[in-house]
Length: 278
Image (cartoon, rainbow, N blue to C red; front, side, top):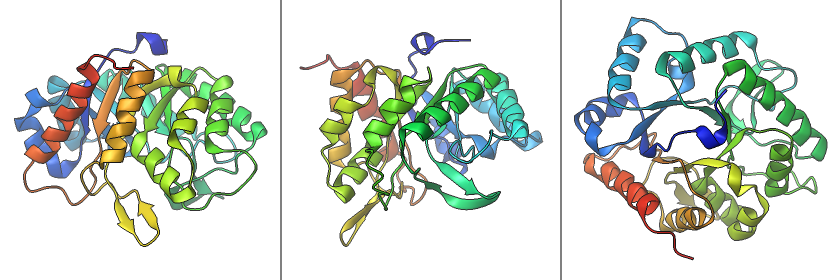
């Protein structure tokens, strides 16, 4: 199986959304790679196969899951893993990703990415599970930090939990700097201290997105331009670690001018290519 160090440098990407299909294809020279929502393509079918075939001709593709629920009790659904492995093989994905959280409880979908009750024991348990998922699929598995509105106050910080998790598996980290900024503002911690604590050498990819501000809270809505604090954190990450991939996420309220998204993708590319400044 390919190691994290062997993951190719993908460059600056964009999250594929059906609403953006025509613009993405028309401007494929301005986008280095695409991230696909895993669950949108797991069932297959002629329409999905045509779309994947078309996109694969133009871009490297990486599946990004939202329903694996690595944090739920028990093993990950083997049928889900089989379908995921087939998708990874079909698009020759260099790695796949999902979230360090849970999305189901008691067999019921919660409809959101839900934070974990952080503990050393749980971090180690989930690391073992993630390792087994990675081995089943056959390419590196990278996991993303999420936003959370309620901090369960278990005595273990998110950064400490992430560090403990990666101490016990050889998976990679998808660092969402907008999520980091959102949590830092909402819960009053220093994002630089967070970066000091997590294993930066495991960071493979970065997400950047824009949210909205409501009274007293930031919301990770993926509906606006990337805010400047997230861009600054992106620069901080690049000063700390050589990055394989960075990408822009936009899930709703798409700009009428697709050039706005291309400008953000271009900013990711320029930052990744710029000489590292101390």
